[in-house]
Image (cartoon, rainbow, N blue to C red; front, top):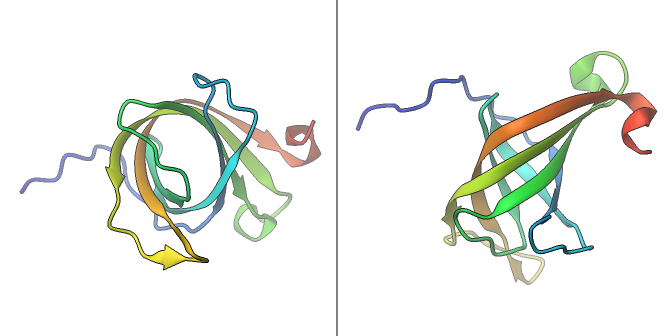
Length: 114
């Protein structure tokens, strides 16, 4: 099998908050990334998503990584793959989600919380 990725992947475990704007949900879903690139992200979350689903998500880069203040990456993307073969965690199954990043903004420090 040939590698189809055009952007380098980084194995990073970061907190991610997912919001589904199309469903007009007011709730958010917390998870963790497994890896990320400039074009995509793979994360685990306790929400079953379908391929093609649009989503907004925010990643938090801690100060230890940025060597300064926390940096937030707010992104919009689309689910391209869902892995249901996850392990049970806290009595709820975590779903693996691969999403393409269609656009993103980088926000430093406290301005992201506003």
